[in-house]
Image (tube, rainbow, N blue to C red):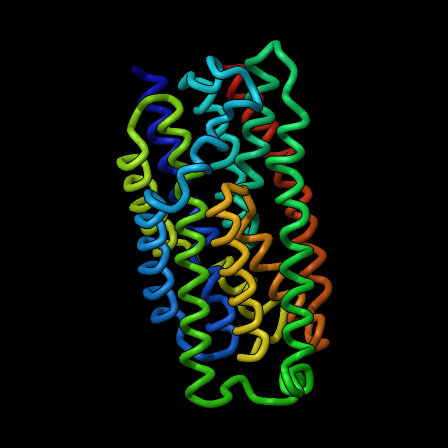
Length: 320
């Protein structure tokens, strides 16, 4: 009973941490381009995320199976509460630590690290490296490259897009405000669809809740975390990576939403963080407005995410 209670708390704390780190990623370009003040952007981001979480019950069942650990480790181990507890602990502590320092890291990446660490601690069988590579590592590595490339191309293909980004003021007419808000809302919705089942999987695999109830609990926790603790990551993404305007913001947001929704439908565990940051970097590269020192620090935090989460999960796995 104690393990089950700890698992429920830790899984919901992970959802809370996910909301804090990820909630504002759709509206980062909106705040960065001075299209909305922070509080209004936060309200819209939270509403869209919650709606996406509810929609995930219908749209993204495949991701629940992916992040239960089945196929990566033995099915019996994947169904035990102590395995899920170790995974959730590794991911949750990694994400909340990054949020504290304002780094936009990937909860998906953290979960993969948690799965690896928990498996090493609690299983005598080898990890299925083929499944780890094809189902987790490859999508996580390629998605930011794809998003950066697409956003870079779109900004270059917009008539005078790069010139507009360098020389124009942030606000460029009411039509741009409307399209930009729509694109930002679509990202937060897509993030809710993509992230909710990954976190719900921890509760479903251990038979604590069914898929629907787990998704609802995760959605509520994500919304609360996003409302309370989004500010530091929002400042990094909105004002430090790139001097954003509508040309860059709309391009980055449309690329991010399209890739994340497509991946969710196909059951591919891409990271909204990697995709959205990649898009912002790609659009900034086309316009020549990137702060490369900030980009470097973010990339280093991504490199550190998996081993930190794996180490914490391994220690918790050994202790339980």
